[in-house]
Figure 1: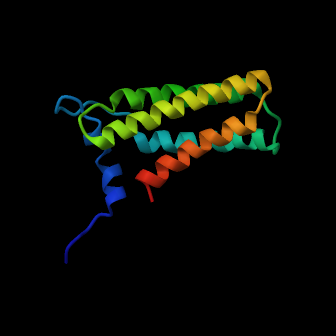
Figure 2: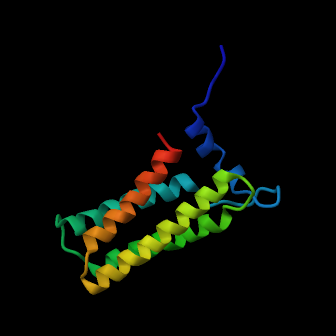
Length: 132
């Protein structure tokens, strides 16, 4: 019996190898733990933006800043010649930029739900490409 791994799952499993620079593996951010934290934080922000709980600007900003720090760290590690490494780097950079725009919208009380929707679309796009 032969074991076959779906291509997208294989890409996620290979992420540490895709983001290795100069042929040597570097320490990587624990992606799975980060995604669990992001999921929880995204739900909290989503409740605020959706009106299920009051928008706490300080808390939402702090959570979004965590997204920025984490995604910048992951983008910085996404080095290498592969198309996947380049795509992953680009996606994390875009996510960080959209998180910053969401913070600006929160501070300005302007189009918060639109900005947050874009941030969630970034999540969905990456998950569609790299996870089942």
